[in-house]
Length: 394
Ligand SMILES: Cc1cc2nc3c(=O)[nH]c(=O)nc-3n(C[C@H](O)[C@H](O)[C@H](O)COP(=O)(O)OP(=O)(O)OC[C@H]3O[C@@H](n4cnc5c(N)ncnc54)[C@H](O)[C@@H]3O)c2cc1C
Image (tube, rainbow, N blue to C red; front, side, top):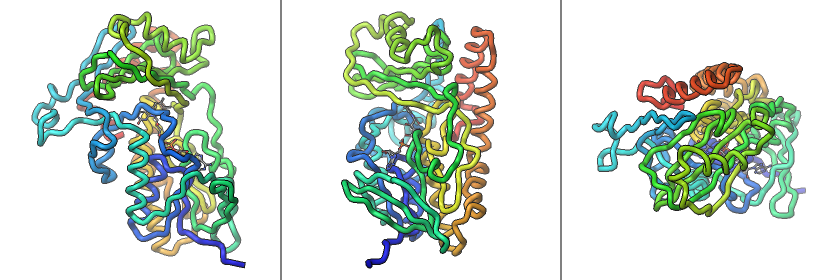
């Protein structure tokens, strides 16, 4: 019988978290297989694509026009009545941020189809083997310290051996469940998100964020520029906080037709409809098991205030890939006890701040007086995006 193929690392899921984990591990000389069940990465799009420049630079992603829809220079934060706090870095820090070289923008709205493909290609160039249309089915730790990984590639079932399996399989992660990790999420912490890609909406290089229970209970609405006169209008709501059980679609229709932006949106046409779930939840308390770690949405590495998860997926991937390279280099076993070191590195660098954000968010939404809650969310969002925010790097 032919020997079972062996890799140091098998990564399930080639989103920002998986592709970055794979690349960092391969750059350090590990043999890495990256698989994704999709035949086209990033599609169907379930993301608005807003990400800071710092997030890309931190993990060595070149600022390529190939995946950038539009440059971002700041934020417009609105309360329910439409009062705006404008945080435009072109005005606040003109020496640093601006459209003319050598100044660079604060961030970007990226095209997730092209972005995810770009990240996968970067991983491949670093030596990662990539299999698309390949679904992870299960894993089993072995007495010799390795694990078996079960995949379906096109229609063929395949068994591999690996030292560590990385679950980077997103919000609905199955990989964590295979290991018996407690991945259950409370319905009260899952935002239902819906966005329309539209034309005929003027934008000015700002990410606009609209707070207020009336427009988006438990979350917020947004207007993001998408380049060439296109924009994304969307929102995320916590269904258990919605009035009369209204859906995200009903809230989005109301926001477009009845909010203080109704005249601005009057001529827009809906060109695409995108949606998905976002965990406004705490990171998983345990993100590791024998021969296994989780990263990105699978580990709930998502900012619980903004719902942003691209930056944290990229950073988490860098931390995971670097940690696994150290583990393999030093010949340490991939036991649960050793892999706890990954979670500890993540907590030291990022996780503790994310827990703090989670506590802030929980505190806001525990407030029973809706107008007080709205005011606090508006103030927190405005503070979060301001130049002196302690969370600038998340
Ligand atoms: C509507 C919406 C808007 C958003 N907007 C933003 C935003 O503007 N900015 C931001 O920072 N974040 C945003 N997010 C969140 C962001 O999209 C996620 O946090 C981010 O994609 C997480 O990356 P990831 O790599 O962990 O997971 P994902 O990007 O979800 O990638 C997981 C991958 O795993 C693959 N997979 C799953 N199961 C298997 C399996 N069994 N076998 C093989 N492959 C598998 C999937 O096909 C997928 O490619 C938004 C989310 C939504 C829903």
